[in-house]
Length: 494
Image 1 (cartoon, rainbow, N blue to C red):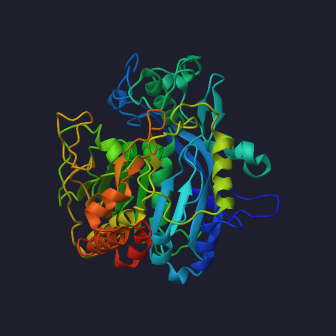
Image 2: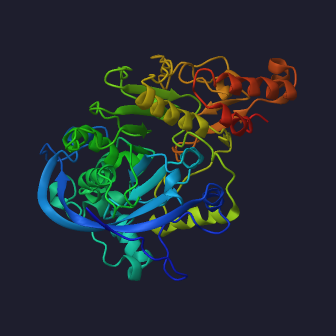
Image 3: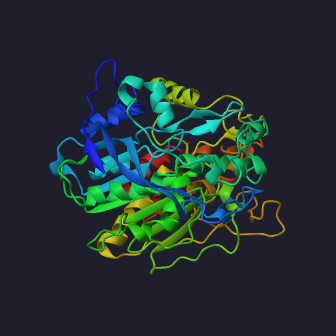
């Protein structure tokens, strides 16, 4: 991998998905911690991967994994040119040595500004690893490099990723994507249209495994021409949620162990996989954590994976949560909301049920609890396991009940038992549902208790707030959150 940059930023030429947008909370945080955002272009050659098992058709979304995506080389030595978006301390003397390096979501190629990364002195970078995904009856190529071309051809016109050929995949015969587009429903993950669409998303990422490995090697080998200008990289981490696991899970499954550095170091030292497909491989010399929401726990295959200290693996489930798991940790500005909505509208065609077409429920409010500190706590515990050998804490999964409609056991308030015990389920003020409606499967909902029930449980609203705040503090000794994040989490006790 050869890297050039940073690519100049001018009034008429700016990175797609940049966080340095005036009026946004992300830009304010970058300034607060004295970070810079830069874009680089990367080029080289790669393999293009496809399914490892040849079948005529994949009949359901559940059966998709059986074809072992990205386990077989289809073509070798294919040239590419892509981009890397970097967030790093302005003064590299303050760099921690930790890098979070991820492949961009196929339709969400924006930089990620999270407080836990900035305050630790870590660097973050995203690499564009998709050539795009075909959407709608016209099979319009959107997202990935295709979206960069639409955004600014003058800046991105030389970028090119090969992608997989449709004939590499069982159900991407000409016209089939267009045919299933009329019935594609993200609320029905096990349907044939979803099985076809999953193949299309993977087709666009077919060169992704090599891009991730090459980037990890570039960072750990300390190239002075790399995005961190030769600064010493001690640890690399990779993560993804939902569609962000499209490449991540097969990478862990089929590529991590093959991509060890010549000196024996792993390409990535830690992985956090959230609300996506679980890899069965336990990557060598690395920590793997899988985090499920209640929404995904309801459909998780049994038996659940076992926690082990060697290999280093943890499985967690978060009760009361939907696919998104948390309301935004930081208050978004109107500018930021408009920017995010604009990115989605620029990439996705309207009318995809469960994705762009989400019905709201008259029965439930949208879930409003902040759980980001739990995810930050997972990262802190992963760091500690790698640095000091202290294993990450263990929590039971959400309790199962085979007789329940969704297979989950519930308390007298209708909330799930077991899992990581948050204040929201230990000191509840509502009954939570992991999906606000059939048409809106990505958002959790809540039905607040009336004043009489709050008074019966806690004596008063003030009594509830006091108990809730105490429950937040109680998460610190178990290492589920850090003490410095209690104030943020307590904002949900109101």
